[in-house]
Image 1 (cartoon, rainbow, N blue to C red):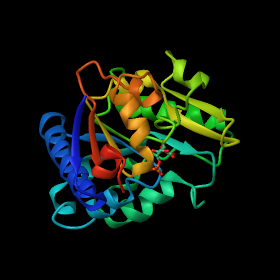
Image 2 (image 1 turned 120 degrees about the vertical axis):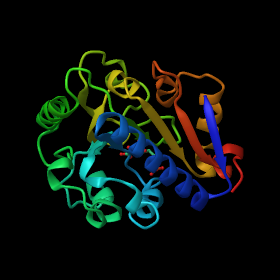
Image 3 (image 1 turned 180 degrees about the vertical axis):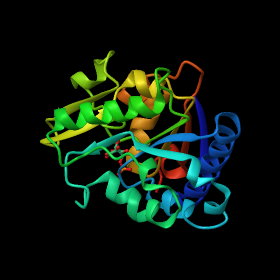
Image 4 (image 1 turned 180 degrees about the horizontal axis):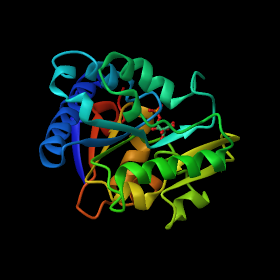
Length: 235
Ligand code: 6PG
């Protein structure tokens, strides 16, 4: 488990932006495109905002990038809770990515239909191999990642690439990539910030099978980029 510790949230955002640019360049050079699944929540906002500015934005060949999401809340695309809205506002509206290469989960559809539609769109782009070049992930203080929450059936899904899941604790529906799809990615990057994540991070580092700890790509990794507060539990 590779863990990079950054001094603070700003340093973390810079490290994530640098890694994104590097992996995008590698993928485009090797395969002519970069297929990435973005994380939702609050943590990645700063990294996305940085990616939308120079020197980062001009180092990415946005015309060759396909953007997906690791998960979505089942809300309309303009809802304050929408992961699509967050990424659109912080990044996608600021860079020249063709709209046809932005693939949101349709949060305003019934959850099961949204999952099927997204799985079809994912398959059409990724093809039978089904491998993202990069999956960005966050982690909740309970160790969940994407919308794979402890004790939910979505965690045990082995056949579907995408499922809808009702999260009792949130009393809300989510649509999420499943572990097989996440673990097939060429690169997986966790981005974790804040003292409130320190306990879950320590449990994952100790080998506990929390959802985030079950992200184990065949090719090795994932890489964790965390700030000192998350690494040491100190604010
Ligand atoms: C979501 C995310 C989720 C998130 C963690 C951490 O839709 O909420 O995909 O997995 O990454 O909950 O969220 P924060 O970054 O807001 O702490």
